[in-house]
Image (tube, rainbow, N blue to C red; front, side):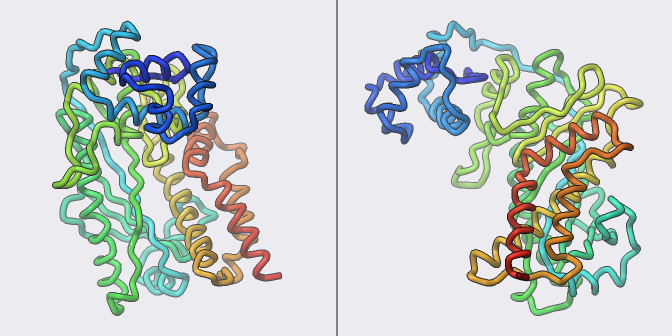
Length: 377
């Protein structure tokens, strides 16, 4: 197995040769125009395709036959015979499952909970709930109408692939569990109670057998583990060949949607669309887990809140929210999440900016703010 850190026209041509395709067949296989492929190859090593094309080439390589991958690796001059990494892996998993329940339901639930200071500006209350597997499960209910389940589970997997498979398989059980729990707490007709639509994972790495570049690659894989799993397998998510993980750790892994927020000698941290991974190398100087959790709670809550507004628009409705959670609320949230504070450390700013960028929340906040303001006007 071989990966490409950043595709250029040269690697694209080598992949086409390895697949033994004509330029026209290769373009059709990728779903791009003949001219696009011609431009890549004409530019050679100095031409870098756009981010979406990088992802398309990644997919084409991952789906190639073993023989084609071997030919591609040989053309690159890469030795794919790598020794596996063995040793203890320790990970604390924090899953966030947000769901919009509305301001009135939130008020009813919060009446039985203790207020939580949290981020201060985003009012919410918290309570422990039982989960069949998590060591700790907290339900955070925000006054703006969003409930967020946070599941904390510690793992010592034999490999990153094992952890990735558990992640995707557990999502399938956690989503209906969260909805069922909300139904019980709200004591309403089941059909009326919404459920969360997605899960965001935050991984706090406590131990790992890797060193040097492999350690950095491991954190990248934790934040974007889909390359280790066959999510379309007939029996549900299944592990890919273990040699893929070893090869990625040996040769490196990159993805255009991953953003680093680590500080050399202090921490390694990456944020991606589906997850965040962090390892502190200096307890006194690195971020605390509570800082990461607080940021994710705010981001996931507001992502879910704005999703509800966009859903109203897509359903042909004029979006509306209670006045205290209207466009001014979103304007204040945007400022809070995009403006550095005097008390923030540089690491905290990097973390917040990375999570905001990969979540796409800033753009969603602006769009939802405009939509609410237009509907009021």
